[in-house]
Image (cartoon, rainbow, N blue to C red; front, side, top):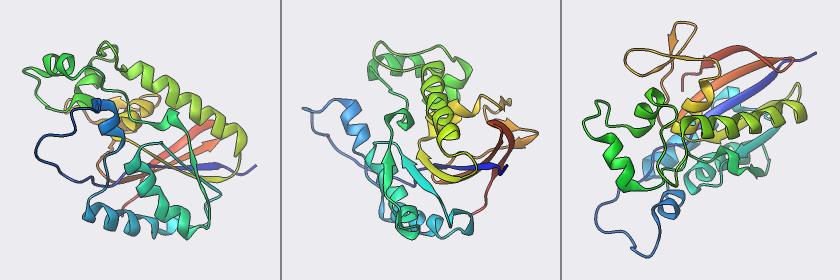
Length: 209
């Protein structure tokens, strides 16, 4: 029986914005519609040319604009449609005032990093690490059943990817994910290769770009 290969990808760099955003939109909608920067588009195209991402059987993406924009190059190179699943979405930040209170005096200044240290924290309308990990795991369980022995590309987000990988990874003193003594760098973009045998993870490798 062939192994199932899942390429887990964090979207490319997004555009930096200054000024006042549309006050009629809630923060969640604004987050979902963030677009890639010009450099992010170039990153996505270069990523799609990685030999590991050739001959893909299926490609999946979160419903967020930046994830779909990253996935489109891989989809085009493999002549495939992009499948969308909201379980791949970034964890919901929820009430930003509450999040700001949580982040006071935190060392990393990165909410996703700090949530790794407090896995049950969430704002009144946000998601915790465990909430996010549960839905991400639900998605991957489905994929492993439906695409046994295939190569699948999955584009998601930094927080959601980190939280999902807690199924196999530990956290070091720098609040980084560690798999078998190897520190993973979940930057934008990143390419991780997960190898499953009989639905069990047998290898997790960060692919250089």
